[in-house]
Image (cartoon, rainbow, N blue to C red; front, side, top):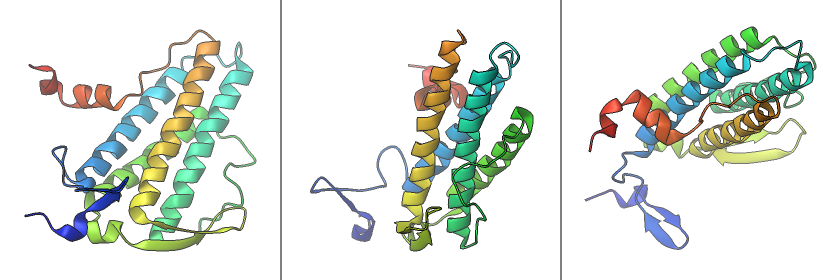
Length: 189
């Protein structure tokens, strides 16, 4: 019998995070693996865009990807109980695409490991923190991780739309695609 303390209330109904799909921890790890994969795919496609011909789009896309990175680093610091050193959710200077891709990959790997190793009780811990505008906040570790996932996905979609303006097909940033690419056996009936 599942531990009742693991149940969550969703729209007045109880849901067990240990569903058919796996544990919350397994799903979080899978979502962070998908985030790493999707980020790499997007960086690789963006690298094919001619910066001289589409300078404004490339610059704006890199700024957006840097914003994702900075927010990821801010929440990483919150999870570690450390100061992040950012006063805004983007930096004054824009990194090169190559340097940013390397930094993002390092941070993505950290999140994958964190999500893989976190316990249910650890994920449920509530943490007080300050936003870059000085406002206070409080979230559980699990909520912070879900914020990082959804925030990155939202803004990767923004970058995908930018690519369409210069007639470059964005990568398909889909969880279903990731699952089938990483586990081809799922395609068998």
